[in-house]
Image (cartoon, rainbow, N blue to C red; front, side, top):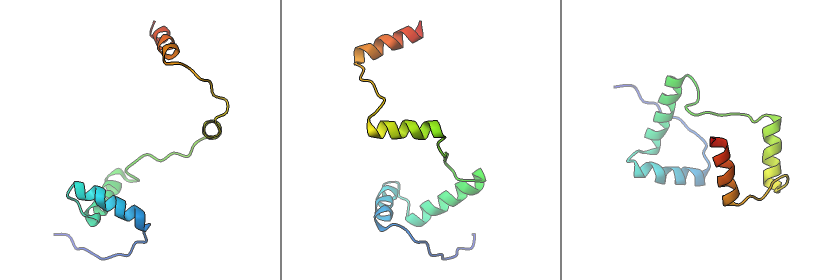
Length: 88
């Protein structure tokens, strides 16, 4: 059995509560979940999920989407027609 140590981590209290409820559905404690995260990080030799910093084009697109600018309204029928054309 591996040695266990105690550590202190500062967490957002609401986030902690929400996460504990999710982990409970899996029968996993918060401590178990953190150990799983650490084990995956060691196995991946990095974070066990992808993190990206968006480039300038992506940042601009996000800002435009949030401001609802530079967007067109398209009907479902138009979308279907354009999709069909792409498949031909």
